[in-house]
Length: 384
Ligand code: PLP
Image 1 (cartoon, protein in one colour):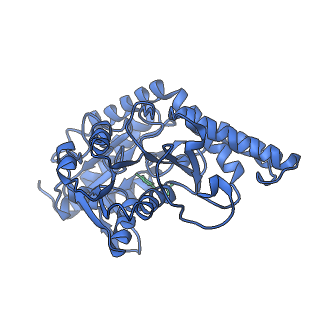
Image 2: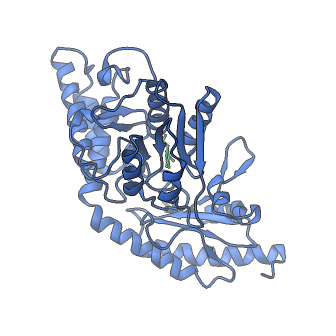
Image 3: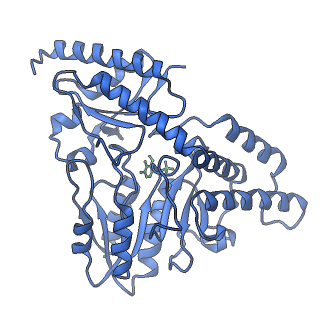
């Protein structure tokens, strides 16, 4: 195995999660809606995971957790579900320019249906100002959606303050916490949040499973039509083993959070210490109020994609500031929103450190980054 520094993209399922999923697949394979013993065993498994997820987030009741196919579905559901349920009340939504595409593209879809969407700008660290949120609220605003932590920069948003503002104006508040759950403490008994999206594969759980927390009493339509699963709001036979994996993953992540994240943050700081004197290097990620494992840097004179390919040849995995979708790299909307020009965006790369990384990984990766970036600059004749 090489050195994996792309934990914001996904994480490896833990041995414990795999064991729980194997056990669920072998012993809880019934249909949770069936009344017989096999069905009851599966139902027990699903409800245990629902309780575990609710407890990990300090949600008031387990029934406030609805399982989805992941963070993307949870985000789609929060925005479209609320917009459709409250369309008679208002047609304005507020979000930010740095959300994940699961939110941004859903907002675009709603705009095509006749809703109005305000996309708030962010500062140089990628943070939205609560005052801007307050100023953007209109009489017909029905939902504010601001992510808890940004996936490219790691920036934590002031979701407590934003939630207070939303509630003081009678507006619902959704947060995409896909990157934040398991990385920072989130307590729904204290946070003024009505809807929260999460995804298991970012916390050593399986892919294709996530949840939407829906605070009791929140009006929301379902996206799908079908059976009565998830209180008829999200029909479809439950993915029992994956749900059990999510329950185990989120419990493990939250129980060990302080020690794990302190260790990860120390490794992240060590990586920056080893890179910071590279001529011209800039830290795109904030120093404070940031995810523990995330370090996004700009290395002027280096093509991010070329650096990544060369690192990959040395078995070091990281990610760039551009999402390659149809083969044509699309410059990151997040890095552009913090004011980087196209050249700087193309020269940016993201390292995301996780539970499995060691100090040795950091030392090896830092040496490789220094050597390869110097090489790439030489090839381009970059003088700084
Ligand atoms: N939101 C954020 C902030 C993310 O980082 C991601 C995944 O990269 C998602 C949503 C989508 O989650 P999923 O991969 O579970 O669909």
